[in-house]
Image (cartoon, rainbow, N blue to C red):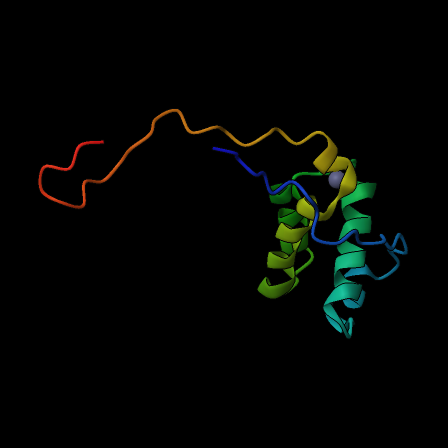
Length: 105
Ligand SMILES: [Zn+2]
C-alpha cells in the first residue's frame, strides 16, 4: 500500500511587509488574498511564529475572528515552514472488517 502525503503547499503567498497600520489594513483588505499576504509577511517577520502566537497577537490587535482564523492557513502555505515540517505518522496497526458470515481474511 502506498501512502501519499499531502505535503504540497496549496499556493505560495507573496508576503507583504508593509506593516504601517497593520490592523486597519487587515480589516479593510478587499480580498482574502491581501489579508493572507499581510499575515504571511507578519509570520515571516516574526521568525516564522507558530499559529497560536500569531493568533494571540491578532487577538491583541482587536481583529475579528474571521481574520484570526485565516492565520491557520499561513504555516501550510509557507515554503520555509513546509521544508522543516515533520512527516505524518505511518499507521502502526491494520484492521479489517468481516462483511459475511465465516469470512476469513
Ligand atoms: Zn513560515
